[in-house]
Length: 163
Length: 185
Image (cartoon, rainbow over the protein chains, first blue to last red):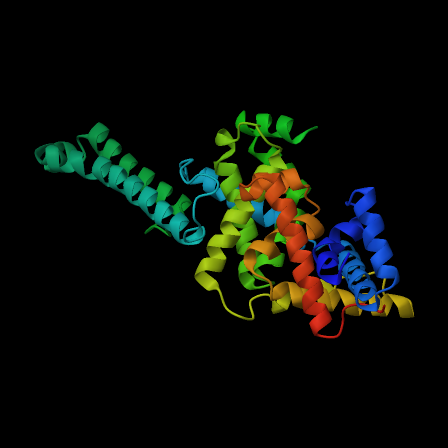
């Protein structure tokens, strides 16, 4: 066996992955060849260094931060859209705030409609004598809607224009 | 409780159970991300995104492979995507610092110091390797994956994994030999 033949076999030799006959040939050659002994020693050093590499640990609090993100996503109704393995896109925050903004606008729209429609649809009723002390039921309904809207806006952290 | 049992409960609506999966696999996922992209600020974002993708994709997990293997595949996809967009020559310099900062019981004797120097030399040589060789080395030696697991993660035959590993180690050895740090024989 020549040095050029030993070269490609060195890593398998140090792993004990060669068949017995081949391993004996390598050993016999290396016994009389300094450079090939050095190759074998280098291959052992590489293997040992790789095997001894210490593990890397996740930073403290990592799992809690992941779960925060999971809950945020679950609560904001993110669809089970992008599947595992798809290319990475903008991470989390931007998308989340867009979703929050959309859901807030929808909520605000529905509430505003519930507040305005009675006044627009029945202006005569709202401005009639009923609203000036005689229509207690209608006024209560309109005031109740106002209060409900402000309460919900306050709860959403909007600050509302609470009185 | 196995990963698969936990997945069943998460699918059944117990979102909090997903935390257990994260705790079980966070070191492996984060470690792999750091090995591939370096200890940048992005490393935690990517690792976090891995788990978010996993959470979203749990319905698509059919159990054909181990959950950890599937998770590795997600991690690999995100890392390669990140590397494509952020490739720069010094991208992994920090990962060496990261590993250096870890407590290491081996470095307490003179021989241990030499051993540590050898490890640093190997890491530096590894950083210069082509990505296709570096990936199999990281997955096999640093992440302790079997040939079959690596084959599933990288979507290639196990025989190719083995061949690449040997070629990668040969390239590392030759790199160390040419720098005069190839061993003491």
